Structure formats: structure tokens, C-alpha cells
Length: 158
Image (cartoon, rainbow, N blue to C red; front, side, top):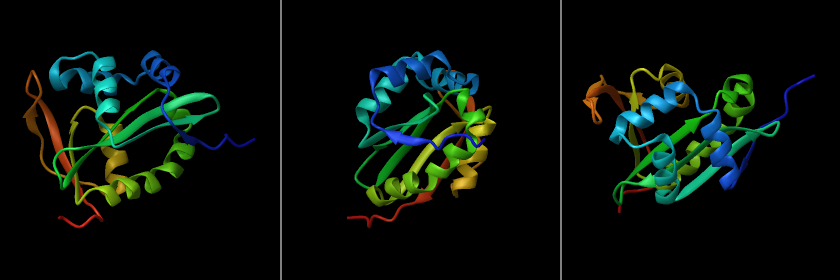
């Protein structure tokens, strides 16, 4: 029997709570390393600042919550926090990814952000999606190594 397909849905409080209860350790550590905020504070802030934000759900489990926030008029910040369930449903999740990234690219001239060097799963996924990575630089409250990454968008700079 095949695993159920993942679906993208608007984020609810229940999705946030489910994600926090099963947050991947690498995502937890990355979120805390940024400003020293709790993962919940970082996720809620990201949701609040996003132009578009969705939950990816499969078999009743929240795989991830993600979105894109404007940095300035040309640059968007793609972000994602994932649960341990993403491993069990990786194919269903991956099937949803490219259209989501294309949506982000349509809203921004360039997508940019940083990924914690310890979060190797996220780096592999972002590379698979076509993001370009730079060497790690010190970032966050303790100067942990983070890799800047980027992708050109489809929206013309205005």
C-alpha cells in the first residue's frame, strides 16, 4: 500500500502545536541559534511576516510549515520548519516542493536566506530544489556556521 499524498493547507493553531511537538532536532537547533528565541517564537514570527504560508500534511501528520517573507522589495526569505514525520513521508513532501518554490520565485526577484551548517537534511533538500550555497559564515547569537543560499526569482526587479 502506498503512502498517502501530502496536501498543502492554510496553517492553523493545531498545525503549529503538532509541529512543535514533533520538531526535528536540527530545525529546533537552527531556530534557536538565530536570535536565541524559542522555536515557537521563531515559527510564529515567520508565519506572521509571511506573504504566503502553508502547512504540508500527510496521513494526518504535519510534515512542515513553510513560507516566504519579504526582506526588501526585491528579496524574499524562504523558510521552513519540519517535523520528524517528514522522513516517513519524504516522497509525498518532495512532490509538493517545486510548485511551492515556483510560487515564491514569482513573488520575488531573488530568494535568499541562511541554513545552519548542522542541518544537513535541509541543505540537501534546498540543493535538490536548485538553491546555490555559499561557504558557511558565523551567524546568530553564538556565531554558529550558517550557509547563505540563494535562487534567482522570476519576478522582475522594479
